[in-house]
Length: 496
Image (cartoon, rainbow, N blue to C red; front, side, top):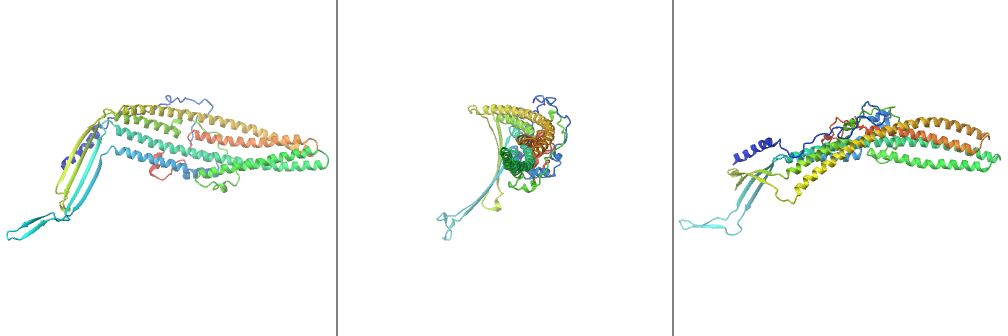
């Protein structure tokens, strides 16, 4: 019987090899750029040359920004959740692969029975002596080994492994997508925080000037040169400027708190790092965008959508295999004895084969096939949508960048003119050559130009960040992120 079991072990790999090339369902094929609606050129002006984007934040030459982005890449809690999902996907692949191999189980038992009363045999010997035998305890031991294997005749299990592998790869790209999101959000909030610091500086400088204006108006009222209207206008203007400061401080606090949480810390953790005011980071004058087809490789969310399509395509084969016969082979080895020494004296074995075929299930299995096909069609639509959305993101960011640059130039001119007008109006008011309304108008124009230039600087930096993010910057497309499921997080795009 052991020979029969050995024969079973020999048959399994041969059957698997013979059936390895047979798998129902469509084979997945990658889609071309034209099938996905990717144009040859951008519809807006964009530098065609591509560039290194893995650590784009270093192009801003701001050490604090670099520190915070790379700290978030190693400590962000959303990334920890994405890593947990990646590990789950890896274990799902292990589960799917297990169906390709035989399952073996062992069993063992031991028992002891004792006669509590009677149960013996009375024997009369030739000399007339009466003796009782038996009635003692009895021991039983048993060992068993069972094996079973489902022949993957139509490739249903292999399609399941194919789907799980694609899901694992999609989870790796999802992790990279989350990494890019965290990096860009840290950088965006950093730019906002620096912009609020600049706005606070402008507001406090304006408040100091308005304090001087109020004092001059009070002197002129006391001297009888003007009515108290000038004094009240000056007081109202100062109060309005002062009222804006708490709001800016609140916005600054929110941006800094957000950075702290993104780096895996309590809301106030990075306040000491941000306490010293720094200019809004400028970044490079121009970045290469490349050609539209690059988004198929550079954007991890697009590659995740492609892997989801591959997984749903494989699921069609899984569903179709359920419509076809299922073949099973099983074998067993058993032994029984009354003592350990004789446990392997007698061994019995068996080899069995079986086939099953679904005959009636009220259309459930056919519906599952149709459902899988519909899911694949939906996954293709989602894949194409992700590609077109990526193209939209890039073009919008490129236009936003050009818009911010133009507003920077115009606000620079406006600030220079407003500053000259305000200085002239202030001197004329001091000498009584103009009224306070004119001075107030020029001061308001100066405040507006200052804040407008700060906002334009902020918008340009934010547009650069959005463009880097839209281009898929912040990760290494050649890196296998699925390996993070079995190793500590140490991905390209984070810390060195």
